[in-house]
Image (cartoon, rainbow, N blue to C red; front, side, top):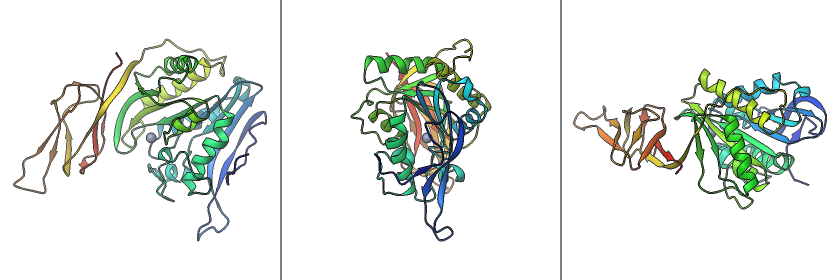
Length: 333
Ligand SMILES: [Zn+2]
């Protein structure tokens, strides 16, 4: 049995709808015997697969928080087959503060796996996800966005699959989600995964897992939120867990491999010159960094080191050396 310090207010085996909190013990000056409340809803209807839905893994990414919260509150247990575990604010302190990392311990939950069962609150949550929830699960979906610092178009994310069966299921989920883009990892997955993410946690426990990047800039985009909610329902339907749902016509997904990131080497004000979706080549001028603090200094050109399409770009005007400005991706051959 696992040595988690977290207690669940819900029973994962009971039928129907249950709501409550994962109690992450947290003893501080203002609350000696307190806990951090991670909201959880469990919907269960008889035998069938288990799907874990995660949002707020990064607290400044909002589409997943809304989509999973609405699903948890609106789906009726009798509509589903099996069990859905909904965690719309998985790293609750980060989500409550609207920050990527937890203000309690500076923990980045999606870099915390595999985690110390006696570690910080972020590590306790990561350990609970990997050692308690993933062993219950057949499928896991973690919804992200570009957060405060990046913009992404609606982009599905998956590995290529550890077995032929897993690959087929991942493709089925991709088709079901039906987002305009899919970021397909060229490696990873499987029981030997060393990934520090929820995807790694799922892979190590044999759970079929996908993510999505859904917008960003620290805001909610209604069209992207609608695609996320449609995608979740279509995915549940595709694995037989939402039999009464009628999926609409599939629109199609462009599969991409990431080529790399373009970083800033200068401090200043970032002026992007091209939009997401633009095809670029090695040497294409992507942006200008201005130096209004220095009357003598000319602006700095940012050029692409890759051939491909701009998939993601920085959402913030201020940049510093080391900041990622663009992510370039290319069609899967
Ligand atoms: Zn994220």
